[in-house]
Length: 260
Ligand SMILES: [Zn+2]
Image (cartoon, rainbow, N blue to C red; front, side, top):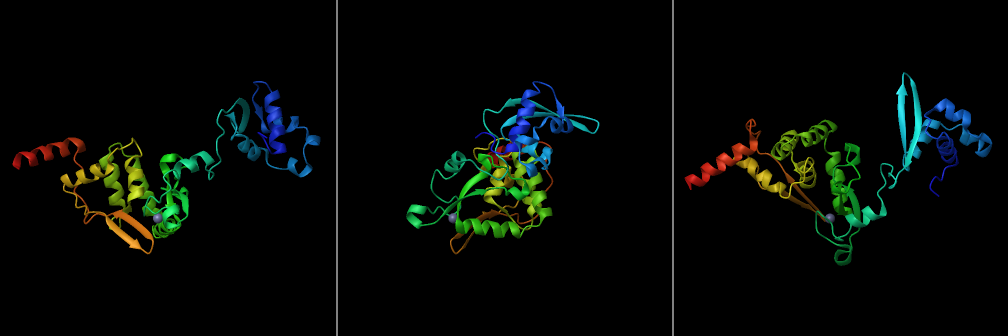
């Protein structure tokens, strides 16, 4: 059934029969056939029920002063998923390789269990989009939870704020600076590097920061039991950004080639 909840169905009927007219909560309430719905259901907050209809329908809200009115616009071709649920199709896509993205183990060969992991956790505002999902085995998943629990909300916010910069070098560099002297997990750093536009080789962008004098050692690989963690950390705080980052990298690379 498209609308499993009775109150939702009744609200939908009222909006549908309003036929292009925008209604306030009071007007919706006045038109609801309370005999058709269960008594306690009638006491539920209508605005909360309207939000649950948002999963399947486009409902336009307009506000005039303190009054919000609702207009049924159309039925959505693809239902919106409430936050926290991942569709079966997306699950299957994430688990398509049948191996853990951190340690490479698979259910068939290593008897591990795979989970759908949010690269940037939902608690940090990470989405259910495919580019924020990956397959992790139970142990790597636990290791990741421990890692995130060790990071303060302030640091997390600063690391994620790096994702808003236009240039990929700056996104990567600012995330590393925000986490200094600790590191950033490679999966989170990749997500931040690719957040504005997809980077076919984000690690190359990271290496190019060394051209600008950044001290970034090879990634730390940690193995604890079955867990496998890779993270990047700065050795020291880097020099300030040049005004034209990509141009300065090209200029220095040319100068180095000429010197060789
Ligand atoms: Zn694993």
